[in-house]
Length: 267
Image (cartoon, rainbow, N blue to C red; front, side):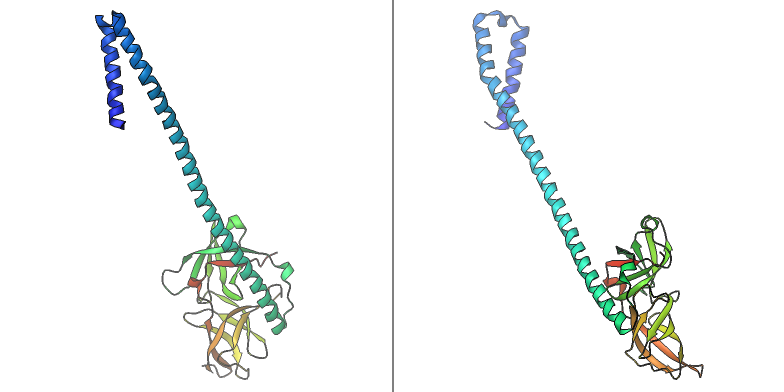
């Protein structure tokens, strides 16, 4: 029996019962017998329909619950895979930094490092990559001056901290400056950011410096291992006869990064 026919039969039964109730015909015994017979036939059908409706609702609720659970499991699996990937990157980063520390004769003190993993949520809309916005701010305890890195490269330094986000200036930004080493003698210089090339300041004419030399950011207190800023792109005699003009190309492209490490400089 189709749904329309069932509803039509139900309405006719109700209508018939109403007519019989308000009319004199309902007093006849045979009419009462017919009504009882109809009720005997229709009542189980109505009860069966209610049972089927209840079962279907239960099945539908269970189906929707399992669908939502499966979606949540997929989301958690993706997040877990991202964390595993980040952990592998961190292990690779620590190994690389240890070898760099030996190369640059900087004693590694990784046990004292305080860091956290976060992600980049916004890029410089100008296209010059002068800054990025990372997730986490005062709620994570970030402070101005904290270092942001990925693997063994410098992403930038936190310039401003808000409630749940932080602004990070990159090595392309003129506001970015740090102590750095380059060349064979590992003499310390000042790296100043710039787009598309930054600069090494106070490089004496007699200092050995060649195109392709790697430039590393170093911590004056020796608590943070060296991280790579970029490579020397140009070396030439500057306007000042006592210094060279050394231009550096930053090695990190912020737009290719998603997860980064925030290293706390204050203890």
